[in-house]
Amino acid sequence: MLDNLPRGTICIEDLEIGMIRYLRKEVTDRDIELFAEVSTDRNPVHLDDDYARDTIFQGRIAHGMLTAGLISAVIGEQLPGHGTVYLGQSLKFMAPVRPGDVVYAEVKVTAIDHARRRVTLETHCAVGDTVVLKGEALVLAPSRKFD
Image: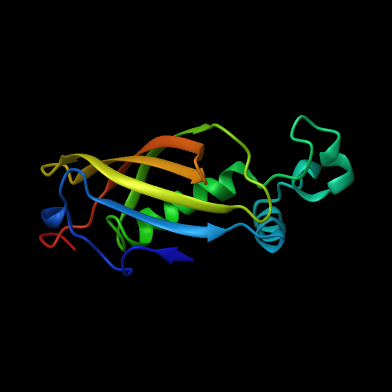
């Protein structure tokens, strides 16, 4: 994985509107197989070349939630980072991710509620210039005062 900053924690006291963190990851056949194993989602559109060729996708695609998991990785590892608790996430899947695609996952701070320790994050994933997923996350951020 390639990302823009080291892993760790940015406490809510240090967050600012507009802060951005990201990672890039190539989605491999092994990633898709492991996700199918862990999630128990063995839909053949993800795992069977012959089956997937006859679908609207004309080939295998990664699980949408595998792609969404990259957003979770940015949130849990970088922004805000360790100690962050997910409260909600909206997702809109825009285009498929295929084995071998390099996914760029980005998170941007759009609102901070210091009193409630809540942070709203704009989220999206892209393959090249194509946005494949977009949404918004609400998280409980770590704080130096309480953690």
